[in-house]
Length: 441
Figure 1 (cartoon, rainbow, N blue to C red):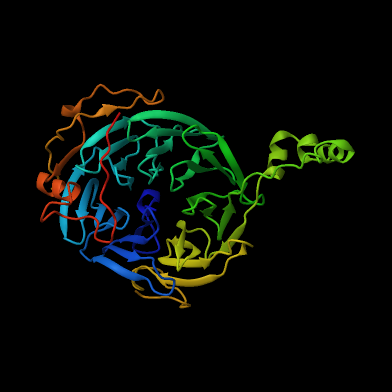
Figure 2: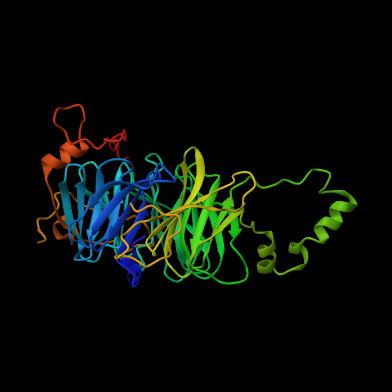
């Protein structure tokens, strides 16, 4: 959650907060640097790293449990730095023609999102492999990158007028499909851990849909309520793809259960009772749009946050072998709730942890808490252009590329190369294996 992309947080110094790809750690950026926290315990929020330099970090993304982090600061919003935080070294940096709005990582690709273009890097050497230019205006940097290396898909808005979502294969560098997800522009999207499902929500409405990837077939449709229209802030699947959580600009976070559709018994669909059942079904006598509201699944579980109207990001993680709902809010707190995987219902608050100091964030009643010069050489690679028919082709080659950067070959090779050699900069400090070798087709 990059608060700077939404006009910043006027109430405090918190600039961004993000869960890593497997929800094992939390990254927090502020006007005083950035911090990384472990999410192994409900009771204690363990600080892994604290970059306390006076640098306003608006984007910080960690690659799983490795020491690789990608950071962007407000003072240099067009420059991306890729660092090894345990060694305190900068692996490389790249500059872009406009403000960086989002960065996404998996074990094979690094994605940089600008308002009207996307850059796909090979994470092993950080070279730009592909550029998707002239995308529809995307001022919030909305996108989703699958964390699965075998299903390495990218999703991004295909229109700023309607809810089209473009699916792009980041390994083979080709457009896959366009998903007509909603009538109004998309507000949030997320892949499941396997990269086989994509959830979406629109700006105007409360309907959340789940599609099969890569074919784009709709699998589920959920409604988070009918009383008021809300804006979904974030969506997140559980690791087993059984649950989907959705947070919004209201005080309520909803959890949906992705169960197989219930099939009618064979004898129920026929006979007199079957006839009356169909006749009394809402779809038989109500307009299509109204009938859909009755047929949509409701939330399996929900929580109420202390405040409404603040941006937040949610996740479902296994902590202590139990599923927990995690919500990081612009008020500077991480909230941890229980989830009853069998009964659902109202989730209770287990713990809240302060993410930034009392003087940095909002004053809040204490409940349960734990304190805890751009360089300009051109990249050597040639950028391939998007094959997406909805994206206009560009005639620019790598010599005229607006992207500039510096990548230390020694650092890059030791960071992303063969880990068997002596003295290499390892990225698997916490048993996280390094980026995988991918052969483009």
